Image (tube, rainbow, N blue to C red; front, side, top):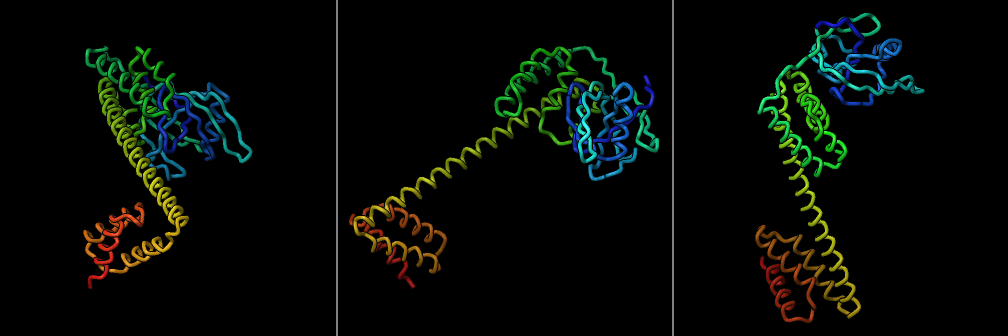
Amino acid sequence: MIKQQIPVLPLRDIVVFPHMVAPLFVGRQPSVKALNNVMTKDKKILLITQKNSEVDSPKPENLYKCGTLAKVLQLLKLPDGTIKVLVEGFERVRILSIEDSGDFLRASYSILSVKEKNTANIMALAKIIKDQFESYQKINKKISIDLVNNIKTYNDFNKLADVVIANLNINLPQKQKLLETKSLESRLDKIYGYLVSEIDALQVEKKIKGRVKRQMEKTQKEYYLNEQMKAIQKELGDSEDIDDITEIESKLKEVKLSPEALDKCKSELKKLKNMSPMSAEATVIRNYLDWVLSIP
């Protein structure tokens, strides 16, 4: 069914879905006028995402062909003339035509209705998406446990799709594509794929961060122990040995050694730093390093 024209609010860098509440900051004059217009009526407005967020004065051709019918929940005018508005999406729509009324854009639309039976495939996809979203929440603390518990109760699988998509960390074109996809089964299938990819990416990221943290802790520990060793050697009157090690380090930077030889020397020097200068092994290592550095 074709609906009459209503004001359009072009969006930058965000796709709003049904059942999603989003705060928006509005500063462009046509958008401000569109909001002022709907506030005097039923507060319904069409949210349509721009294809290119850098376009400051979007024309009909700069907007996607599907959007979301939303209601303004709250509007606050800020001192600098911009508006902070809270909107809630409630219906996916296909845009039929967009016209410039002079003050702001208006569009006619039809509801993007989905009349699919809950087939075995849809039921199965919905179940695994609920399970995967719970796993996703465990490694992405930005997702609240309350949202996970709410999703578990959803029997409306279109609502399930909209809410999960809104909370996925995927790019804007991917979200827009899911907004436009009419088939419920296709939407659920794509959502499941994105969920699996997101979980894999977050797990890899967690492993990398853990490895880097352990390496940093190891480096800090070695530095602390080396400083302690230097302090102990100084107290014992072994400052000459410290000077010897410093001299060897300086020479290693100056001589031209093969990568393998340089790595070996650094490894031996590291051992030397942690040894008592009076030990037999320390003498052997020092003699070895002196010999390597004396080679022309």
